[in-house]
Image 1: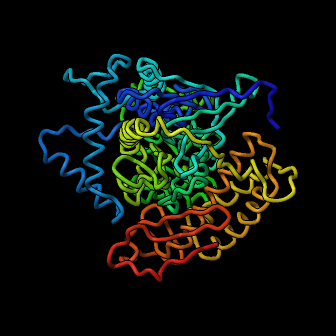
Image 2: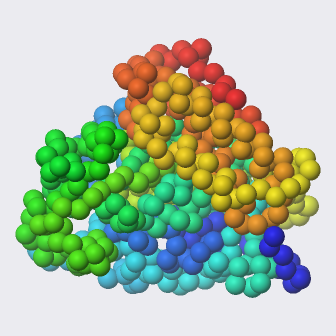
Image 3: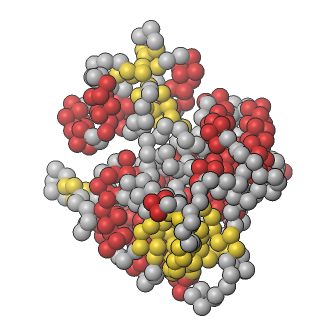
Length: 534
């Protein structure tokens, strides 16, 4: 149990940002530019935590001239999104990214292409996040590093008025922030796979939002997987577009680069080890790879492997809602949730509106993180201005892992996390879904939820994170069971085709009882095709 004899630290702010990754940083800057006093609380260190810092994000970057260029990419994305994307949102994030990203120039040195033009689209993750931290500080934002938020605080009218957390570098000292509005930018979760940079991403923001009464959307789209060298976390995948694959006996496998490659590779991995050779990587990329993505060749250098000549074993790591698209439902154009005073940004929010039913991994997700953070921060500042005089008692909302319904007892956190992994990582459970498999996963997760919710109470960050992982897995399984078709990232072996009548988004909500419902369904969706799952 984490405890401290130090008095609880009390802080007031106009806007509280929960999370210090890309979306949280842009939200903090936006709120500060709108005149708000901003506090940003990060469970790690703002500038290094989260998946961006270990990556090389490229933004969805399309100049406004000629206008037909944006029309073309939006039309393509809408078509690829299989009925769940919205053109209006795609235009919005293209425009916001175009206008906002260059403002980082005083803190970040953007590259220049061969014709001397500044390349804003592609950035290097470590330098980008370091620059964003400086950008945040330059705007007068107070950063609380190593200070995980444990729960949200609500006013008597149900609106969100702050949060409580712990200061890891201050002896576990409790802190409490009263704020006019809160932006959740705590990231998604890969369910503790070995996805690079995702170790601290445990779905905390989903659980806190649900405890406040918010809905989630698109949680069935968690079956995103990324290739990596076996026994490593190096999930940078660009080079694998030029790979040759083979089985243990050296027989070449037919795994062409494209939308179906992950599925083909997963089926091959179910039959046995798969090996890879990056022999078709163009020479100019080989020469520049140490500069473009320095952590990619680092793995091979340490192993003494020449990936262009030596075969090496590969695997797939689950991306969950990080390269998947589920998250807290975005209620309006400001990235508000259905709970007053609570906003969402980045992977904490559903990305269906900009990505559709397929992964937004890469450029769309980066543009979304920047844009949703900007929208949410600006709107939160506006809301905060109207709530400054509303002094009221704040009610803590945390439940699972904090306040058990029954007799408290020890919960084996490590075992509980293994149970979640066992339901969310295997291909036969999460990628190749069936009614039978989903029913069994739901049963296992429900049993564990009762254990955690009824008895877990030690107040440790690890237990709270475990509760968030578990809750996220339950929402994912429940919505996957309700969507009886295959669409984008959601694949059902027993329903292999798309059902035109299911071209709508699914909302999930609830803690002890998970509910699934349609969100603004299309006219062709039959309400009786969906049902509450647990």
